[in-house]
Image 1 (cartoon, rainbow, N blue to C red):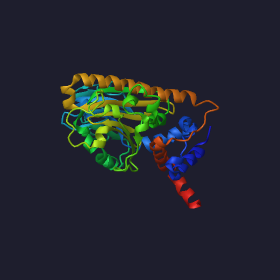
Image 2: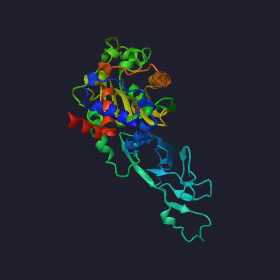
Image 3: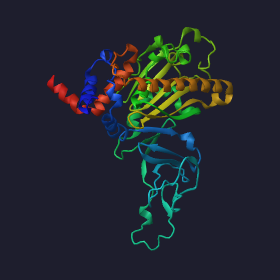
Image 4: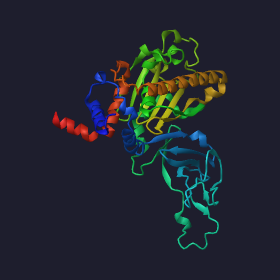
Length: 391
């Protein structure tokens, strides 16, 4: 297996390599425990990670728990109306004070019944009167950085990270006509895929695989040959994107579950006639059509497993007005995500072959080349400077 130094040299090369001259990553980039550990430290512990939707915690007292890079987190809509991300480990002897999801006015540790308000304050600790070191005010559940974008909730484990808006400013402009804030989730999924997170990420950012993997589902309406890269809204260091033209036979009123419906005010002709795939670094993707959004968020669970969180969104009024198309779309998207899971697991299964090797990226995979550039900038920035000086 390649050393970490070798892999970082490989990543550094992508930054100055033209997109149309890029090769896929070496297989060890998906298998190396050392590279995985570096990705966790330099990417996932310092970036804004999507943990779900505001609608999951619509009412005061609503909460759900999530394991975020080994951090036990509870996302809670406090009884004071504020949404927070709290560490769920009891400040007494570490027992999780809450699990799963639900609605509560307070969190009670099942070990010794220390009790916390939904803002994290300790409000009860039985039989601690004799302790000389107990300070109730100092025993609140710690908070993590939490911010929202268009109904999505993001958490950052780095207390010193720049605000979420720095990452999402360009996406605001690119997605404005899709009115994501008016959408609601009609299909939800949380799962583990057997394979490195980068395999899942790559699969989620290009239309080229519609030609094979999705040939019987979304590839029917959006064939791979329709993929192209927008000029009007240039991606930057925060995201990469691609569009795919809908086949002519599905335009002009032809019936298909994914055809635009509802209030289409403000959408351009391009937005009505294409799918729009955006990948926000490091691990958040949205496949958008007029009024719909199939989103995914990835995070590594070790070098060879990926935790996947996602859902399918539709405009709220369309969900209420047309339950049949809602059900048809949810059924289709469930099939699509099953196909995508297969891509990750099958790639991971065979890449250990002694004959496995890198391949040239297709022109339709420009987004993947840009993803590799992101990895190079983030993980091997010092080597890029050294290479440039040498040249």
